[in-house]
Length: 623
Image 1 (cartoon, rainbow, N blue to C red):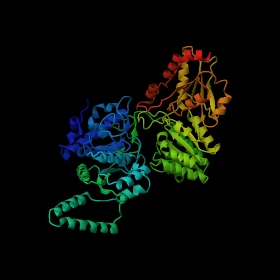
Image 2 (cartoon, one colour):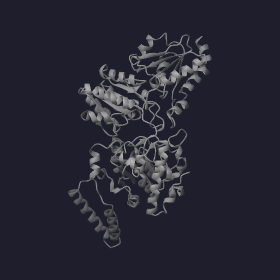
Image 3 (cartoon, rainbow, N blue to C red):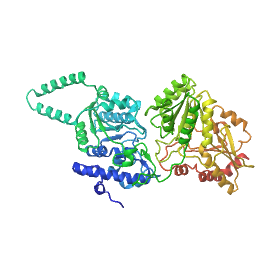
Image 4 (cartoon, helix red, strand yellow):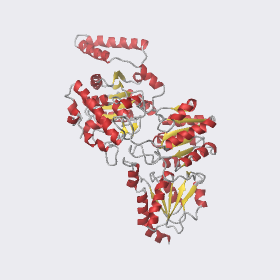
C-alpha cells in the first residue's frame, strides 16, 4: 500500500490543531497526491477538490465539524473534508455501488450536516440551521462554503439578502476560483474581480480597537474613528455587494495561504454577525494537467495519474450527437439559438458556441432564468433550444408551466442525462422528468433510443411542432438497437406469434427489453416488444389504433420513478393487465448504471426473471 507521509497519521480533524503551518503545508501536498491517486482509479470530481485543499484543512482546524455545521455547496468539493473525517480508508469505493458518495451524505458521518448535490442552496440551508441554533439556545458555528459559480444562481441571492439582515452569526465562505464548471459569466464575476481588502489591515484594525478599549474614553474614540472611516469609505470606495446586503466583508485572501486563511477564519468566529469571507483559489491546484485544463478535469473517468491521459477512449455519446446536429440545423436556420446553464461542454454545445457565438447563451447556474429567457425568445419569433441535464431542469418547473406551457410557446428542451446516471447518485439521476413533464398540459416528450432517432426527433421538434417539446436522452452512447422508428408514436420492435407477454418501453431501455426477450425465447417464452417514441396527447389515439396487438399481458419497463411514469398511464388506460418495472418510488444509491439497472430489476435478466416468475398467474388471469 502506498504511504502518504503525515496524512497516514491523521485520524480526525483534532489531529490538525497541534500542527505548525509548515507541517500543515506538507499535509496539503499529501492530500493532493492522495486525491489524484484515488480519483485516477475511481473517477470523480478532481479539479474542484484540488482547489480547496488549504481552505478545507483550515476549516477543519478552526471549527469542530462534529458539532459545527460546515456545508459545502454542491458537495463535490468535499473530498478533503471526507478524508479528514475518518473516511480515507474507504476512498477506493468512492462513487461505487455500496461505497462512499461523491457528495456530502449525513448517513456516512455526523460531520456531513446535509445532502448537497445541486448548486446555490448552501446559504439557505445554513441560515435555517443558524435560526434553529438560536431558537433552541444552542452553541455552534454555521458555515456555508459557496463557489463563485454557484453565486450565479438566483437562490443564492435570495438567501444572502435574507441572511445579511437576519442578525444571525453565520459565516459564508466565498470560494472564488473564477470557474463554475465552465468559466464564469456575467456581472458578478467582474464585481468579484474588483473586490480588495487587505487581511493585514484587518489585523491592525483589531489590535487598535483592543488597545483603545484599555484606556479611559477609548471606546468613544474607537466609535468616532469607525464612523469617520465609514463615511470616507462610502465617499471614496465602491461598496461591495455583500456589505450592502448586511454582511461584514473580509478578504479577499489567497486561499492557498493557509496561515492567512486560518487567521481570518478565527477572526470571523469572533464576530457575532453575518460574515462573508472572500477566498481566492485556483481550480485544479497542484496537478499540472488539471491546472492547464480545469474544465476538462472537473468530473473525470479513471486516468493515468502520471500523464493525466484518460484510460478509456471517449466514444461518441448522445450529448455529442446533439451538439453536432444543432450545428447542422443552425447552419441553415438563423432563428435557432442554444441556451445552457453553465454546462456548454457537458451538453455538447462547445462547438456550437464557437461557430455561432451570437446565438449561444450560457446563463450560468440559473436554470429558472434560462427557461424564462427562452420563453421571451420564442415569443419574439426565435427558436430557442434549451440544453440542460434532467436533474437541473426540475429546478425550473415553475417557468416551464408559467412562462412556456401556458402560452404554448415553441421552446425545445433537450433533456440530457435522462434516466439513471449512476455514480453521482440520487441528486443527479434523471428519473423524475417524465413525471414532472407529463404533469404539464401541452408538452410533448420525445424519447429517442439512438442517434438516428435523436436526429429525426430534433428535426420534427424544430419544424413540425408549434408548442413546447422535450427530447430526453441518457448519458453515454447508443446500444445495439439502431433502427430509426421516430416516425411512429408507438413502434413494434419485435413481433412474436402466440406471445405470452408484451414488453413496452421507451428510450435506451429498448436494449434491455430486446436482451430480455432473447433470454425468454431461450426458455420457450415468447415476448413481443413495442417502443413508445412520444409521450403526450397523441398517445391515447396511438394505443387505440394498436388495441388488438397490445391486448393481453403487458410489462412496462422504464428507468424512471413509478409515480407519474408511462407505466402508470398505461395501467390507467389498459385495464388491470399491466405490470410496471421501474426505479420505484424511492431515491437510488450511487453506482454504475448497469449495477443500478440490476438493483431495480430493470436489466435484461431482471425483466426476464419477472416474466418467468409471473407468467403462469397472468396466463390464468387472461384465460
